[in-house]
Length: 495
Image (cartoon, rainbow, N blue to C red; front, side):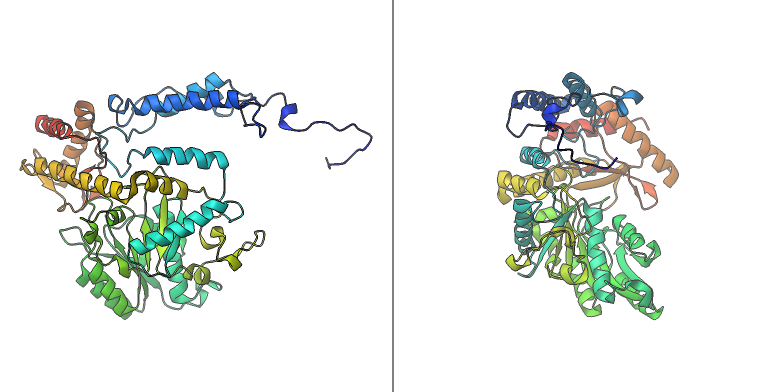
């Protein structure tokens, strides 16, 4: 039915105040008249959150049971009461993974800083959109400025910068898209004019997002040439050189190398200086996936582990991992910030231009249009902890790793997958097992045993044709007593 204006009808109030079904606390009135009701809802929710997180050690690391959600609750016909909303929130909290538990060791999921929790509330409340500057004034400005400073911390030149995206997978996709577009000049006309098959190189331990990126880019997962890793878990530079030479001989067109700084399973760092030298000699784009290991840049003691990262053309880094920021918080940096303008940008004609002031609508530079202002969570965490606080947390995690590793090495029936470099230890129990199949079953059973007998969650990744147990020492509240009890449980494991 078309809208019409009938001047014979008296003016009616069509604001929220005139509605009958929408609850009074569903939105905060702009004149503040329902502040009491909204505060009651938010305070009750916050109380539930604090009660849950402050009892994290008493709750399982990964819940097995939680109150059910009925089908009628999924798409309710009528609004529910504030009490029912709180009950629903309680269900979510009870069924959530519990990374705040000191024995949650399975993945790169930290307990979040309180500043990033507060920032999440702020960004949810103001509901800004990083699509454009006019939709996120302070956040767009903060993102560009902070990421330029961070680029400098990684040793990139003054021309560098970047943007945030919703996770490391999108950051890696963005970097490889820019690398492809730059190398083949296909930003406008696509790949139809490229006669040779584009290929890129990554270690056999690289993150699965690299294959995803190749698939999305239309290159196919087979275009990612897997490079052998040494027993240390690091990419072999000689194998990389040989693979590049062979690909050229086979008529393929190499365009990029992905080095990893902190592999997902074992936490190892590829030899960045040697790989950078090869990339410069072969004129290939160097992308460093430092989603996890990039955090050690804040530690004066350990940042040398990232030697050579300053030679990268692009870097992925996820503060949502070892910097204790709520998800999502991930970013991609470029050696030349303006390459995003040349090799990726799609103008949005429905947005105002701000280029005369040196600004850009970040949605034109990135894969994502609409996205949340995750920069707020990162910045408030930096304010709360400072570089010194992050360094202290990282160095504490490395000490915890040394303690965990010492316990493991005292047991000759435990085999390490690789020598740990960061705060990840990957090992397996070799008792009562005679081949890879039996070892896999043995360690699967041990994972369940640790959960049931020691309230400990370790993950069970597949690595080098077998199942291993992975511990990520991220939680600053994990104690020596925890380690003692975990390894005592391993000793008791009947197999």
